[in-house]
Length: 78
Image 1: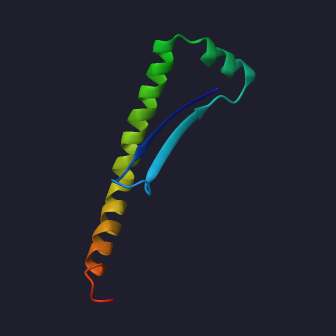
Image 2: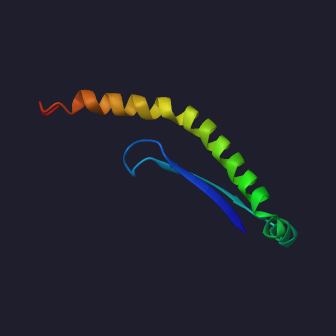
């Protein structure tokens, strides 16, 4: 069984990340499959909080890349 959440780090589809929780044993699969919907939703919420941390780590890199591209895309051919 898998629970996943994904996020776009910008306004395009080019910078998208996904976190996936995948069960690694039959027993864990059964535990997660038998969990009530609210528990599975809590797991999804934990993935969202983890995505917040991943985005916070990657966003400065993306912003620098976007800023660098903006300074070279002004039409002078450089």
